[in-house]
View 1 (cartoon, rainbow over the protein chains, first blue to last red):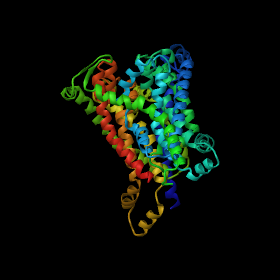
View 2 (cartoon, rainbow over the protein chains, first blue to last red; view 1 turned 60 degrees about the vertical axis):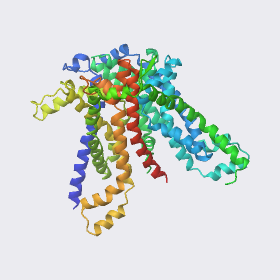
View 3 (cartoon, one colour; view 1 turned 30 degrees about the horizontal axis):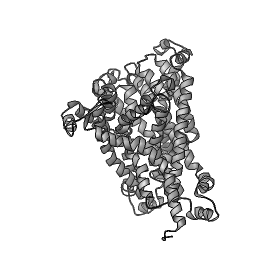
View 4 (cartoon, rainbow over the protein chains, first blue to last red; view 1 turned 180 degrees about the vertical axis):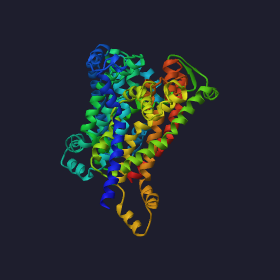
Length: 270
Length: 293
């Protein structure tokens, strides 16, 4: 009996290990390829750093990483500001109009990006939002707000009404209750939103491609997408760029895995 | 509390004031544009001037063979949905055995969720290329005579996009099912086993019903992804080609507007996509709501 279980477990382990290689394949390929020159990729022996040198010539990596960071920081700040306030209001400061607000904000989750991107692009261009970061920042913020508001509303619902009432009776305004009592309790939900949105915005191509017209403001993912669409055929260089672009989001994922999973499954509960 | 007290009034006012910024942001960048899309879908629009054509823009498009070709591509991708759900379900069952290292494996399987479609597309492109790993593997298995060049044919390229799509859904769906399995009531299994139920019977009559909410959820997420998440993958991997081989509805929207300058058709296709997704999304909201109560 014992031996049978051992055999079963080893089979399960072997299957999972094989699957792990399949899922890790992009990383194995990127790392392996980026340390080769173009000739080595096509079969010549050895390794080299030449592709990394060439990458920094082909792509302003540092600048684009900074651009990605700024765009993420800008949009996430806006999302957090509006979604925590709205979540608090919709959970704790309810009125007859609350359900309409909730539907108006959270219901926008039903709108696919591709359905609004053309009018949004034209509007942004008329408002002169395409020359810097702002067009992309606002679009990312608007796209992230519905789900963030949903998450914050359900989170704040878990805080007892009495806590809010008592503070108000003690003479605190609603703004102060929000800042001093509700927000400190909401840190886990806030982290979930940050992680979820960071990965989403960092990895996005379409919004950045359209809403950032000046190449100097391009994010790393857009820079890379443009490089590949320009049919740069130096594969090791592209892989070095891919690897660099992937690292920040992967690091965030490894640190905040639990929060990311919480965010993903928030729609179904536990 | 039913009486409208001054305190209650102040609270409602503050509440609306607090919720307003989110509503304004969403209305400005999503709400108004979807209404505009609805309007412009009836016009011939180049981004500057729009000429009203009414419903004929829609009827005209219904006679466009490329439009049907594009929907057909979406249809083929949907064939991958059952695999993108069943495979992760199996993986979640394996992980749930909790053999040594299962947490590490869980982390690895979910890892692709963190990398962009651009990166996935670039790697996938090389994997399916003529000199890529796929042919290497086939050769290794003694099947070298099936030398494939998937990305160079219309059907092959769509197949390659589909495989990459399934691969990328593994992490998300596995996590959904793993979450679901943590909620399973083990005592039901015990009771059924005592009553002499077989494993298959237990799985069908006890496990599956308990997982149904999670299956629905992953089903909807996977379909929505198939329709709206693959733009970047297609952009990088195939550019929609060869021909219209891998042009899906979402990619067709982009192409119509930003490659051909036909913003009106783009808006109309966007409206169609919106209605398709809204139906699915309402289903999802209903699941979330059931959970709330």
